[in-house]
Length: 455
Image (cartoon, rainbow, N blue to C red; front, side):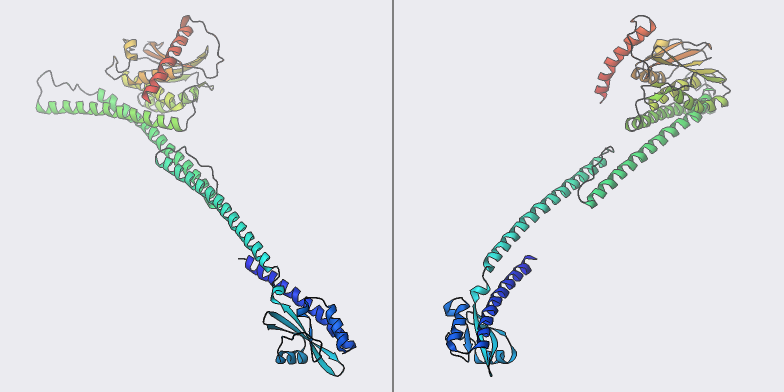
């Protein structure tokens, strides 16, 4: 510790000051001896040096009084070699030679031990107090630094546990020592990469699921073109029974696979939307994107098709993934329940604060539209899942779904969505727009309760 050398230095300075004072007194006596060796005159010079009368300088070789403390050997050494300092009981003596005529006299000045260490006790006490203060300050500073490090470490641990529990939105505020701050930045980068990686993975799953729909629809159409799988009426050979049962298993497997793909798409898209997607999407962009997908299958089945009104940006308050799933469900019904070669059309229009997405086909149409819109029922032997998805998405956007006879002669499915850029205005409570406004209000009161119940 630097305080010990400092204390020793101060103590040495005190000793040097005491010896300097002894040298001054000795010089006064040496000067007097250079002028005269008369004992009385030398005694007057000794008295003029001041100090304690008991510790007056002594002149060896001249009777000036006083009590000498140095030994004869030390006196002789000083007379031959110059001034020396010799330890004696009670302190030290300084011996300095003085020439008086033909003889060499030695002047002895005694310095008491108390003079050599004068003030050293206070110095050491001061240094001890300073050392204690430094220790206390060091403890406080180290405690503050340790507290910051502990807080930073605890934040990293809690964030790591949260990420391990599935919450990838957790981030830390880098703080504390440099190493911990760098660890905080590294943790945030890792969490960002995990989010991006999981999002890419789920997007890939959803996209692959969408791509599977094309060959799956072809399989369903080919399976529908096969002979009947009914084995309850008539008499059949063993080979015919096996063939019909095989056809039944193929159709059942296709239905099961379709259901699994629907669940996979909806789950993956919903999760991705909740984590990364905003609450708005461009209807025109989604329609164009999904029609690129369905146009490939339409070409394989020789289905004439066209898109109208999907040139300009039209935002609606629905996540892109959910609107894409609803549009795929409606278009999938066209391919599923109309013969190959049947024409269809997708039209987008914008009016009176609403966006209408209409899917028309030239098929046989829907005999009971109200029943087809109810969840879990359909007039075509399916579960009704497609139209139910479209209805749910439309209600989420403040609109509705309706069925009618298409201009092409078949079914017309219209998804009506609230225009996100429309200026709010007071609407007439009568007519189509008024009815839609009332339905939107009712859906807004009903759906929040259902969502709370689902959560």
